[in-house]
Length: 306
Length: 308
Image (cartoon, rainbow over all chains, first blue to last red; front, side, top):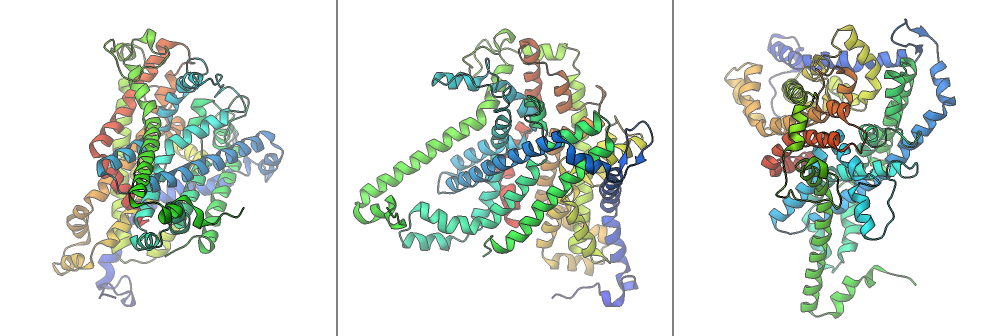
């Protein structure tokens, strides 16, 4: 270890270390204060509010675990939770699966310009606001004047009720999500691919291994940490699905496509059940923590680290 | 039948086919991959193409099928003229979005850069514990803290003011859709990669810690800071959730909320043309930045991933 001017053994506030200690604390102070006021404080308050009945107008009253008991009997909550889980499973599988395949296909030797053009085309939707692209897709998904049904009609497929049928609504949201986010997964997977040593591929070539076999036996295992990371990030993100549903179906028909975050928003800011909304928020936090914990546990057993 | 890996076509071809045939198969396969990727890329681009084309078509024909994909000679600015002439204050929305995204970006990047530097380069008590605490907060979704955050902003009198979103951004607590820790983590990782000698030299010159940060670390971090700025600016520009909760009056609205407020049920084609023109305008800044800095943005994402 290189010689360090600051020696903790001399004490943080010894004349020799004082300047650095003060500088360090000052440098992190704005972030730390903001973090305390806008993240930790509200977090603690959410727990407190979840034990209360509060409608913003009259003063809050303590109700114990009543909000959590109400959650158990709330059929709509279970419906929106089921919708959100359904969305998460297919959107995450589609994003990560397609993203990895695209990354692998684009990682071969090809003209750099062509490669950038493809990557740019796939990545650009990730940079555009969900509200903006969802508004476009809402037109594309229309039954009678929509472009998608027009082209399906050309190959003899009957007009699909993309947004107004309970069976299709959530699938439409999933299609939009994959279209929007697959490019991001592709770029992260590309980064993972580029960190794999070329030696493995040279060895595979010498063995005369087919490209499919190389993919299963070399690329996929060595990419597993990246894939795991993508699965976790995408799952956490998917549980927050909100904007695309608001634009495309507004949760309907009925509750067919309503999501957990939409429900939190509606309970809190439309029905003014702040306590109940807080209790459901904690459910969202619990899910996030569980997904992250599973990643931690799995990364020790499943992911292959070089 | 048992299929072993040795019976895959490539393996067979390696044994039986002449080098010329194998080369041809390989070329064919490459061509096929290009075609499939090309179709995929078309699907990615088509909605934007449809949007821009439609925004330039005469309002009466905007939704006639078959859709046309390139603006024709009859293309015009009718939709844009109607949008500007309507009571929709699209200019106001645009200005609000610009002010909001710029202020949040400047504040967030400044705060997280200096904090990232401190966590990477300076020694002070509780450093590691505080950093670990920040990392844990990465898990907390903004939706979880929404109710208290709203009440806090109401108490501070900031509801329906841009400050309700700018202030958390300025402190680096979070930017819309992005935990504050993201910026601190990204910058810390960068500063850790800089050689120690650079900073030792400054210490020998007896430069203060802020001067060392400002005149040595910041210039070197230029590209990293620029990449973080682009990410935060676009995230803030695109965000709907926080402005939906905090900015309600028409005068305070930003583009995503404004567009949702003017959106009509589909079918009324003159109003919908205006919406499409408004969306086109909203996407334009992101598109321009991307077209100019495309390679650099893609590379910085790929590199950020490698560093993890």
